Image 1 (cartoon, one colour):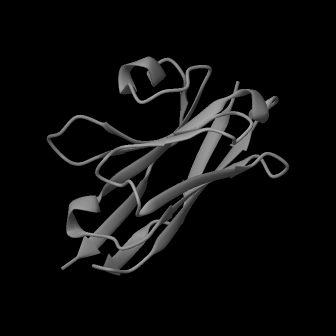
Image 2 (cartoon, helix red, strand yellow):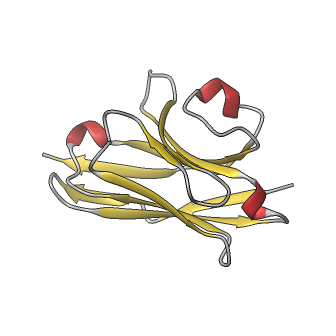
Image 3 (cartoon, one colour):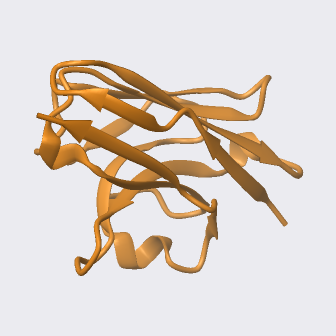
Length: 124
């Protein structure tokens, strides 16, 4: 069993930066791939970024590539999402997830563990 708690969301202006954190409890954190997803009202949850258990592999959605960076600290059981050059289109609730699956297909993460979400609002 893994419990995930996101933090670091907030309200910022376009062009600003935010860093989301996701703290995990439970065993064997380093054996799980970790992912970040986001969702806005009326839309399906979408993939943002993922990182392998070792942290050596990362993948990003095209919409955030070059602006967002996912990283993890296995000693602290924490995964991060550094978000730079934020745009109003990045406004969403951001979720972190843990899974034995590593990849960009959201449906393959559905049976993993999920946090409660953190609101990120970017004003123009």
